[in-house]
Length: 291
Image 1 (spheres, one colour):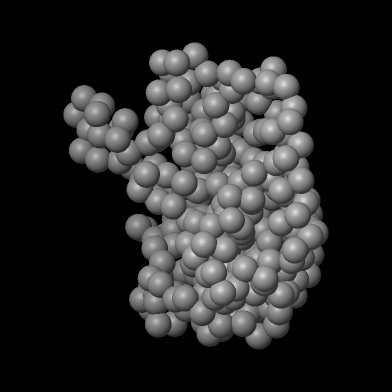
Image 2 (cartoon, one colour):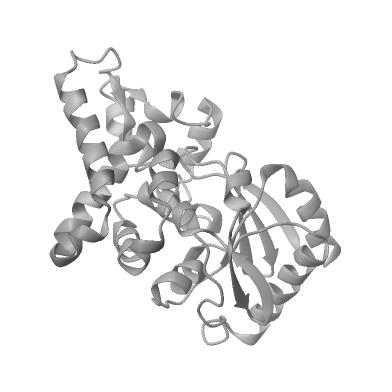
């Protein structure tokens, strides 16, 4: 999907000092030929028109570009940090920061070359940029089902805004074996917008329904002791993997995470940090991070 001349810039949402930081960082990356589709609240506003205050700027990058990006940012006098090696780094200018995202927090959606094709053009603080494709934004948001944050409304709003322009075939392919997550969101879309159910191509729903029907008719799965809930929430299914003996879905072929990644990501859960002796609250990295 490719749209040009999207939503207005971030001038109204960002204070001047922060805006200067963002602007300089974007220009530095652009001047050095580094690709970085803009995501987060900005890309969501581009496609849906829903504008909301944002505490940072989300840039999708290739993992192999991080060292070069870090060197460029440090040359500007800013601090860089590989906050979570399996998916997220940050650039700091004082208390302000930019997120550099190269995977999802659950390790399911690594940023690859497909994320850099046919991106829409937009403007961020006077800097021409590319915006993360709707399909990629939808994929990354679909798995965020934390107790304190659920991005299902964002998924529904993206579909409602641009259903006719979506690359539906590519979207189904992107979800791959996790098609049930997509099916759940599409089913909810029909509940949320009952008069717009036909905007989802019939073949998409028929294909997913046929997969569900085939699954129902299969004998019990050998992987019955896997809990894939950890791919949706890093906290709410810990009881299953820590107390009930389920295999963590993040430690299967569904995710790129290692046991060490899972341990670090779990330790960063705000509630666990707050429970530590002498803790005064969650760190900025842990509190701000999501899938």
